[in-house]
View 1 (tube, rainbow, N blue to C red):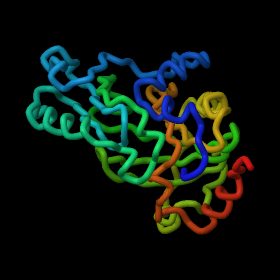
View 2: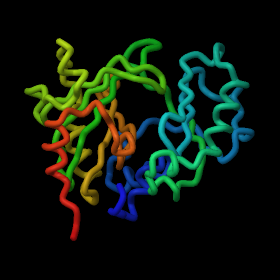
View 3: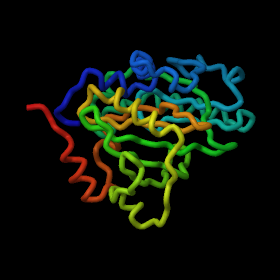
Length: 240
């Protein structure tokens, strides 16, 4: 995060610009539907948005309004949050400098759900030097909040001792439908990067692209075990 610079990093961290990157690689069918993109909150006509939708800022993390029922949406509060988020320079929060080049915008995308009014699980594929290594399943997620995290090997046969909280839990996560397609897409998308985490959802049996994350948690996450730090750290091959 401190010393390596990839000119693609800013584009792929941008939640709007990354769509064109995905499309250029022939993976446009994996993208969620997009209803609009806005530079200012006042451009959003909330009356014309779908009953279910997601509003997210393109230049950071956790800047999401997840609307399962527009009739219950507090529009004033949503506008207040979006205006606040648009003024945040996310590159200064944890030193993730590739965010500095992202133009702050808001996108409106389709609401994804595995069942009615329930947020879907997401599957985060950790890729090193263009090769998927393992997948973290994030289940029982709260909006902009915590989830339960479990790591699996690439074949989804073995649970990996990478998450501290997972070691203390007796649970098994089923392999998502469309998982092989997720892995193939992650290999394509990650090819130019020393490391990138690529997130997907499984919706009605089909993979849906979420986002690309170059420096998860600003490279400071206390939930990784020492084994995870050593094994995944050894896979990062920085150029001379």
